[in-house]
Amino acid sequence: MSKIELVEPDESPADYYAGVRRACASELEDYGVSIAKAAAEIGRGVSQATLSQWLRGTYRGDVEAVTGRIGRWLATRAEARERGLDASGLDRHVPLGVTDEVEAALGYAQATGDMVAIHGRAGVGKTWA
Image 1 (cartoon, helix red, strand yellow):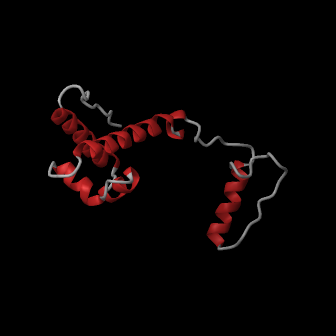
Image 2 (cartoon, helix red, strand yellow):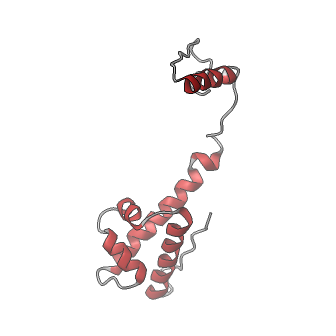
Image 3 (cartoon, helix red, strand yellow):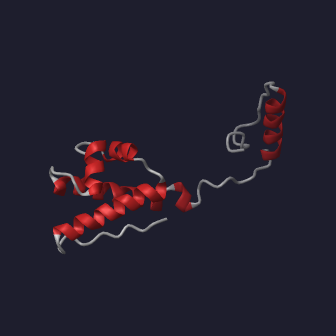
């Protein structure tokens, strides 16, 4: 996971824009995000063409506004990674008493092309298994 490091805005606008540009390029590469997906996530005012030109440093529109939107997008993605289930460990599978039985039944259904019914009392872990 790459850490996003941006130059402080009070440095110089050119340095700040370059820092955000490097962070954005790194985000796209490190996480396999396409320009189309990034533009859709960033939202209003940043189309695929705008993002592509901005990344190359050839965008002639409101660079400050686009850079601000992209900076917020980067910060939001970084925060989501920090607060997500992956970071918290809450999405781990915990084997329960019924886990083996449910897996065996589902394995049978897949192998034979048949259907199985999983039933049990409320709270025994059918969904989680």
